Structures are given as C-alpha cells and as structure tokens.
Length: 272
Image (cartoon, rainbow, N blue to C red; front, side):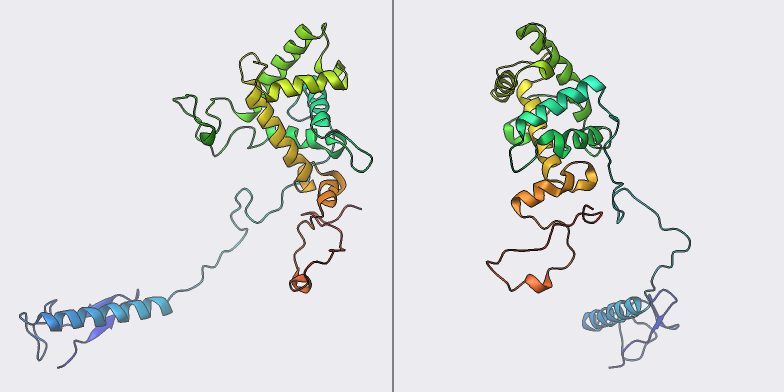
C-alpha cells in the first residue's frame, strides 16, 4: 500500500498532492471502493494537520499599551476618608450611626464607624456595585423565594437612598421628631431589631431587605481589604488572625498548630 502524499499550506492545512482527487484517483494502489484506505488517509491527514498546526502557533506580539479592562490585573485605587461621594451629609451620618450599632466599639476593637464601614459603603454605592452593573435588572419583577435573592427593580444605591429617607420619616414619627442619629443607643437598637424582624415597613421598600443589605455591606466593610475604605488599620483581620494578601506562605505550609506571628498585609501593603 502506498500512502497518499500530503502537502501542507501556510496554515498547516493538509492538501492532497496534484494528480489525486479526494477519493484517491490517480494514486497507485487506491480506488473509490476501498473504504479502509479512505479512513486511513483521513487519519493521516488529520494527524499531520494537528501536528503542524500546533508547531506553527506563534505568540501574539502586542505593541504599545495593553488593553485594560476593569479589575484586570490592576489593583483598585485606594479609598481615603473624605467627603461623602454618594451619600448626602445627613445620609452619611445615619449610616455611621447604623454601622456603629451593628458593630459597636469595645475595649479591644473600634466600632463600625471608626473602622470605616460607612466610607466603604459610600464608595461601593458610588461605583459599579451601587449601579448593579453585571446584574439582570429588567422585569418582570415578582417576589421570589429566599434562595432567589432580591427581585426588586431597585439598584443597591437606589435602595439605600429610598430606605434612609423612609427610616428618617419612621423615626421622626415614632420618637418625637427625632432622627435616627438623635436616638439613644437603646432606641437605635430597637429600631434595628424591628428592621431585622420585618416589623418596620419602610415606605417604598422592605425594611427587612434593607437590613440584610446593610448588615452584609457592614460586614464587608469590616473585613475587606483596607484599600476599599473599610477595615482601617486592618483591625478586622487582626481580630480574627487573618494574614491578608501575603504572597508567600511556603515557610508555613508544613507548620501546623502554630501561631502565625507576622502582621497582616493588604493589597497596598501594611499600614504605616
């Protein structure tokens, strides 16, 4: 048996030599009536095509600057305390009061306000999270199961704005015209517990859903990388013994049940 001659073009694609058609006519020892020969020829062609295609791959050379996409290998810009970006001054004060009751200060650890949870939430709402980018936000809108999550047309930013206005209205109607910020700690806790239990129906939004958003975002602000504005001085990480974004743990891979003595490291390094 004489194997059919295969030639490769510039792209590594097999071509039958001149003088032979796809069925093998013009080739010695081949005929249209030999299916075994055609199968063997197909296998030879395929194998050679794969080999030459693989060896002809070249790396793409990119000249100039690389195309940049959000969060693609570039650390986020560090958030620093300063004026509110999304919240109004009144909204910001209310959020600070709320996060400081969700995570109150104690002798060992600052509370949610001093750790920067309110700043974290403010910057998140001013960005892609607040706009619900990447989420399907078209209708229809219907109440789903708890496993399906929030089914509201409101973005997180819009929900906070609506809920804070409704919360202020509720507090003033319930506590002699006092805003949430003006309430005593016990009164603040009563309001928060009522939100958690769904006993407060805020105008235009669910009090319980707002509480769930607020609690989740406060936790994120307390334990996220400090570059996002919360977890100031890495107090959240220090409290739980989390080492942070340290790049190399090889010296500790085989060391079990030992206290890790090195301080935590964030994306932007360690606090000065």
